Length: 457
Image (cartoon, rainbow, N blue to C red; front, side):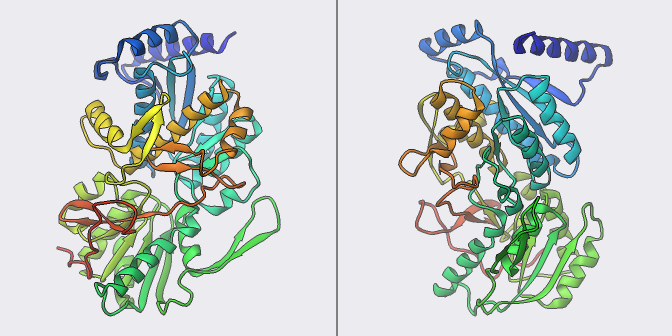
């Protein structure tokens, strides 16, 4: 039975279940709605007609649409779906229509593994699209490796993922989570030199979720050993706080799920820390921590969070989101130029077209998966097909002069699959706008950091 026949059976089964029950299960096979399409050129229409006569390419993703990671998971799915829509609008991929298959792993690692296996063995996926969170990415990458499939990663930065010697994984953000702490400290140093932060802070509270990603950020700040999975070896890393003159006066890790936010906020307040660095596993946790800090009336001079660039963060917190600093991989003002369908496709194109398609502006959690999808589309074009072994070689062969080009910038990778020469963007909510505050020399539109942050209401 061909892959296309299997897909038709899958679609028919889903349709029958939906008709009988009035709702679908947690599997949705979709391409972007035709009603949302914009006008295509005559050439694109002709190519689309040709594509419809061929078996589709199947792009498959297991994502947390429910559970602890639901907010970013749903947005990652939107980013993937929009990319597939754009590929088809522009004429398909090597003459093929692209079909997007999505499963809800419910934020559970065992579900992610089972779904990746099903995408490969049952759905006949040509291209896998990575999941959200290091917790889910870690086992999913192994399943893909065993099947000889490339597994591009949108949001799985814990270094232990990248120390296993896998040759099938490629990260579509700036760097491993252990490296992230460099960016807020570099920002602080810059604004101390400018006299905007005066005097320099001398104390910080470090709090994080018991999560691969969040724990890795804190490990990068304080230093320690990172175990190499499957071996008895470890990699020792220095902490970015070493030698800065900033003392860690409080450090705590909370379990996931967690509810005792008021006790945590009171403990941080009692430390008297001038700054708080909070590494959360989800935007929901970031929102809960900010609400608790506001309730206990604790107002650090600087609050940096690993989550909070999402529009839901501002919508939920309102004025209390202002002056909170968040690192990011993407910003509307960073007008990188990628490619799609072999033609230039800029960050502004992405913003304009996504807004027209969805009725709302995109944020980082849609831009990252869109960029990943751009990269995989380029790998298919670059190799002339969907041979995953060939695509892995092609991706590893990218260089600074011949990179994958995306709305997140240019990508080429080291032997671990981590991007080379990429730095994070530091942003801050100011008057309900997520402003770009550091680095100051890459893009126009940078504004000064607000320090100290305003008090919570």
